[in-house]
Image 1 (cartoon, rainbow, N blue to C red):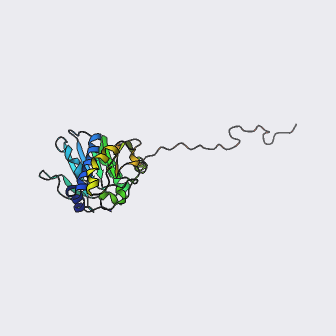
Image 2 (image 1 turned 60 degrees about the vertical axis):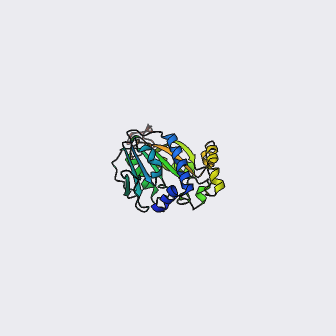
Image 3 (image 1 turned 120 degrees about the vertical axis):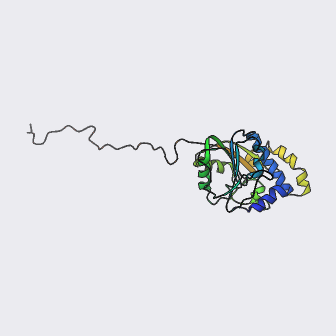
Length: 252
């Protein structure tokens, strides 16, 4: 199920833990995608907290928010980029997106396969998608006090397998949210240390979320599968016919 947009906004913009989570996720994304000059950048779910660095140079930034979640205007003090949309029917042209970010979109979707099909449709040639999901092995997925405690958490292998079934090629994956999901002063003071240490830990053993960067595969075309030709059995005796007497031939 989707979280309410007010709850997401309150977490990411009005809580100390949420602002720390926003920084952790955004810093990791910028490591993968340092710029988006002249590109079309789209976020789905509640990706708005991560997209601000691209507003200055990107050709266009669009934040799609699913109907069950609700929508809020974003960014504050600037022309609105937010659009309320159906989860699997986006108001975007086919093949025009250069960078696509999903945050709190895939794990809460009731139709993840259809959602991935829509991601594949809008992504352009050479475009890249970044799927951010709760880590099944991390502590954040086990606490419902944050948005990462809702929906279906993934392991890196589970997400990559699902992406491959929908003609995405996973390229890189990184972890994020290494700090403990608590607003207690002790944990918040040590958040920076945990984030620095966690970046050297394998993703599946790391923090509350991980990111998989994937590219769009266009061959074989959607809906077509390659099938090996079937072997046709040859009727016995036709390839090497037995030599015998012709019917009616006189006996010796």
